[in-house]
Image (cartoon, rainbow over all chains, first blue to last red; front, side, top):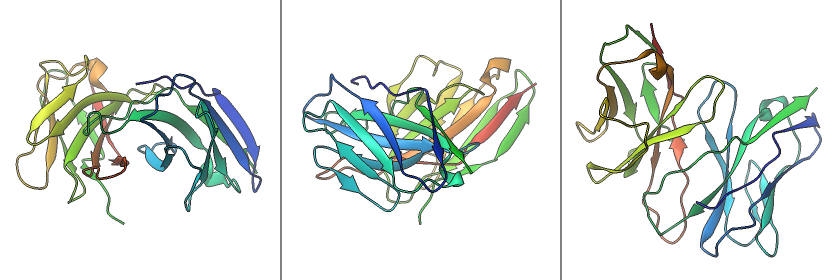
Length: 113
Length: 116
């Protein structure tokens, strides 16, 4: 799997937007960009994924650079419950359809009341 | 919303004993996974399972580990002779068959295994 680079940690104030960056300069044309998060003492949780276009869902937005070498997960209004480790993961989908998700160290997001 | 269920939530076992961790994946999913997370470390892939056989396994998944889908709903991870270093959170995950797009994995809440 192609490598991603994320900051080790970030802080945000409650009720403010958060932009979590991810660099993936070696991304290939068939790699999907996935984001998962892990709340304290819980299992990983899917957040969002995309291929080329920006994506929105009820949890977050994913902004993908035009060259696809970077992406940003956007939480529009951080809450205390959003404090978690956020993982940016590339998956070469359809190559091996049962392929696993590989987690890196991620970004630990702290939300300040 | 459908979810992956794991039991027990916490298991304490003596070193050398066998343990079986149980998972009920989401019902229409066909790909199953086990991961572990040692305290303070990252989530590590152990094994993937599809069509009643292991499709991939990591170096961690040695002969002490085995997986099984004994019936249409359960997916189990067995550790034959536990070691102290097997103490970790174990997460089960499942995924549906991708059609025209990639699909996400759904994770359970984990089983905390403590080997004493």
